[in-house]
Image (cartoon, rainbow, N blue to C red; front, side, top):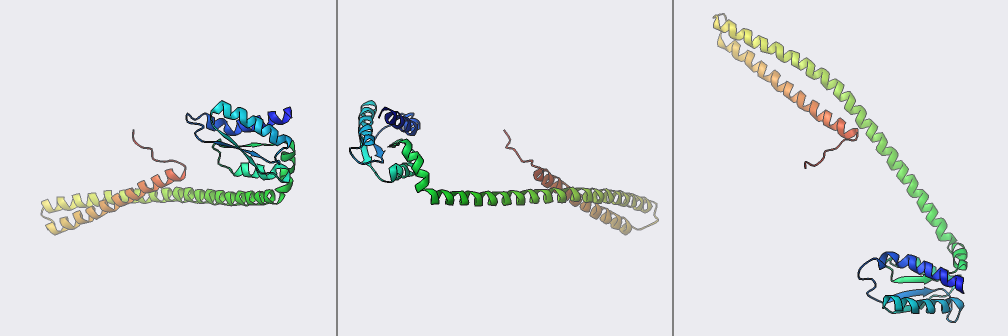
Length: 221
């Protein structure tokens, strides 16, 4: 009986430990589940323990009898109860031995569910990794291609700038009309616009590559 009382006290203390740390605990009666019939040794221990617990916390302790299946019914109710410290339980070594036997089907079902969830998580992880690799690959390829495009457009813009300057000089010398100057400046403006667009795309590509490699934007503090 002493061993059963020690076990009962350990289980109750573990269940109520977190809730007792709260300032208002307990503010209502505590239920003590007993998985054995009234008058049994476990029932006697439960009532003695309940009396001491009620004196210690200053709240009633209600003895709930849920006998059957060597205490597994009470253990199941205790497992499903809210973890608020208001539902405690009395258990013996028999309960822990027989509970897996009575719950064999459910335990196997839980194992199957856990394995399925693992497979789903692995598939999601692999898909995420593959997507990340693809994003990085696309970003690197785009960076190289855009660098070549920007370099070519810069050379073209510089050449157009020289053409515009030459047209202006020829106009001042009276060789050509001002229409040729306007055409050259219009072509220079179009080249500069194209260069700006390429540089913007290049910047967007750099940001996307940074994010694909695991970077992120932090809030300014």
